[in-house]
Structures are given as C-alpha cells and as structure tokens.
Amino acid sequence: MIKFLFKRLLLTVPTFVALMFITFLMIRLVPGDPIEVRRGERGISPERLEMLRHEMGLDQPIWKQFGDYVWGIFHGDFGISVISKTPVLHEFLTLFPATIELSFFAMLIAAGLGIPAGVFAASKRGSVYDQSLMGIALTGYSMPIFWWGLILVLFMSNTLHLTPVSGRTDLIKYFYPAVTGFATIDSLISGQKGAFADVLRHLILPSIVLGTIPMAVIARMTRSAMLEVLEEDYVRTARAKGLSTYRVIGIHALRNALIPVITSIGLQVGTLLAGAVLTENIFSWPGVGHWLTESIARRDYPALQGGILLIATIVIIVNVLVDLTYATINPRIRYGK
Image (tube, rainbow, N blue to C red; front, side, top):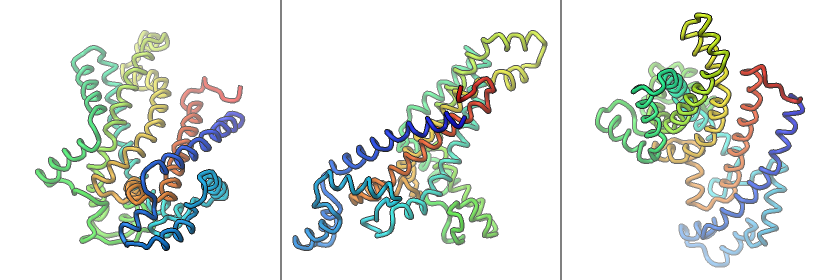
C-alpha cells in the first residue's frame, strides 16, 4: 500500500508542472492585464501605469515571470491578489468552505438518488422502469447548468416561493459569526432558532443544479456495473441457494459493483468544482467559483493561478483517496504486489 501511494504521488509531479505552465500561459493569452483593468477604472497616468507594471513584475520576460511564479509555489507563496491585496491562499481558504459545503450536498443528492436509481434500473432491465430512469438520467446529463438553474429559480422561487433565490442565509433575520466557514455548522453553533433550517433552504436549489449531472453519470454507471455483476456465477449461486432478492442485489452484487461507481464519484469531484463556477454565479453563492469568475474579469493573475492550482490539487488528492478505497471495498484487490 505504501509503495503504491508513493508511486501514485510521484506521478502527480508532472501533472502539477504541466498545470502550472498551462494556467500561467493561458491566462496571459487573454487580452489586457491587471494594470490595464485598473487604468480603465481610475484613469492612471502612463508613468504610474509603468511603475505599477514594474512593481508586479509584468515588465519582465515571460520566462522570468514563470520562474518567479514556480519558485513562489514551491515555497508556499501563491501570490497576493491584485484586487484585494490579500494572500491568495488566505482568500482561497476563506471562501473554499462555502464551495465544499455546496459540493458535499450536491454529491449527497447525486449519490443518494443515482445509486438506488441505477440498482433499480439494472434489476428491472429492459422494463419501462429501466428505460424511464435512464431516459431521465440522459436528460439530466444533457441539460446546461445555467439553463437548469434559471428554470428552477423561476419555478421554485418566483412561482411557488418555496426556496430563496440566492445567498447562503437570510442576513436580515439571522446573523452569526463564521466560526468554521460552513454555514450549516455555524448556524447550529449559533443556537438561533430557525437558522439551520434557513441555511438548508438556501442549499436546496444550488445543490440540485450542481448535483444533476453527477447524479445522471452515477445512475448510468451503477446500472452498467450492476448488469455486469448480475451475470457472474456467484450471483447465480446466491440465487440458487434461495437467498432473497434484497440480499442477492443489495449485498452480493452491489458491493462488487461499487468499484467503478466509486471511481465515477471520485471523478465527479472535478465536475462539481467546475460546475460550481456557474452555479455559484447563478445563485450568488460566495465561494471559490464566484471568486474565480470575478478574478477573470479583473485579470487578477495571482488569484486565478493560485485558485486553479489549489483546486487541481484537491481533485488529485481525492482521486488518490478513491484509489486507496478499492482495497477496502473489494478485498481481492491488493496494492504493492
């Protein structure tokens, strides 16, 4: 296991280097720079413009800027935001709990509905239930996030008035300190009556929007894995022994079918974080996705570079953890041999 983990982490090094280079290069291909954006807002003189560009190192050759960027990353320095003048790492850690919270509830919905739907569809293969569930999954996978989000806002919020339109909580009714950064936990700690329920109400729509595509992927992957496992000899043997359908499907088949499903769930972490950029902007969710969107508009190079690299690091870590869970789910898998 240790040998596998070391090899897996070693393989991430080229990924980090390539990611740093691509991020650094692609951001600078966008017309304009942070100084040009500030010049448009404040009318900075050409002399002041050149001085600011020199202070930020933007007058240096590209290779020199990239070298300074890599040197800072390896020393734990992700730079200073051009707009907020705060360290990028601090700003990221302040906003990331909101994105984690949204992604967690989205994945909870995706896995909580996707896995049972896939199992049920596989157990009713070829029936109207199977075709209907997979048709719904295909529809969910095909819907653009921005369109689906606006439809839900119009129907659930504007028409039925069941859920809030934006934000994490009702700031007029409830106010509590951000102890952990997670609104669900902070609302419970505050002890304010109704605060936790209000946070959950704000989470409903963005979680559904963000979790729809992963739910569709998980449902289809679960069905495919279950159909393959249900044809195995040990499943036939279990049925021949007279075991109930629940034990055959829920215990013998599902446990072995979970390996590709968990792989799919791990891969959906990247989809969730990418989808959070659109979802957070639709619902004015104060997370990393909304922050990155504003950084793009303001050409905040340090924030963009640091934010993308930190998100990529989290995705890689999650994928490594998914690999390590294989042995727990299926004892036949042994790493390090």
